[in-house]
Image 1 (tube, rainbow, N blue to C red):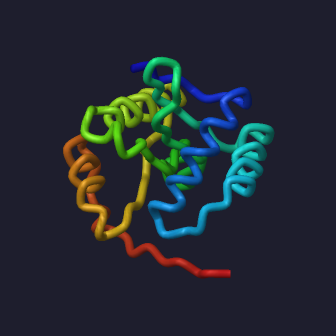
Image 2 (spheres, helix red, strand yellow):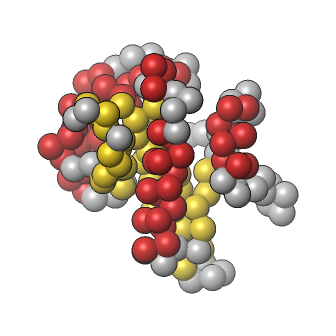
Image 3 (cartoon, rainbow, N blue to C red):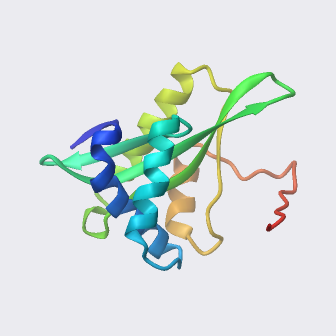
Length: 146
């Protein structure tokens, strides 16, 4: 297994995984839209994507978006996506991807990584908590759908 930062040359493989990720979260499959969305992220440099490959085939990814903490005046990374193909789950690949994201956050002198997951996704919650992520009990998070 190898973990590395994806580049534009990995667009097709990552797009297929991104489409599967969206389906996992109950969105309709739209591979072309997924490809276009990720192509824009690569071209604009407004996200960082780490992938894990097995025998040269990309089988998982995580995507980080930059943000900042005004109070601490430091960078924050939003871990927005984490996905491993079903046949590769339970083999430690998500841990490898999280390690890559965490190391990257430290290298960029971020103050923290933040993430959210569905209440029903207890497998992901257990993984995050095992790695030291804690539920935020100091703030309410609100959403305004536009």
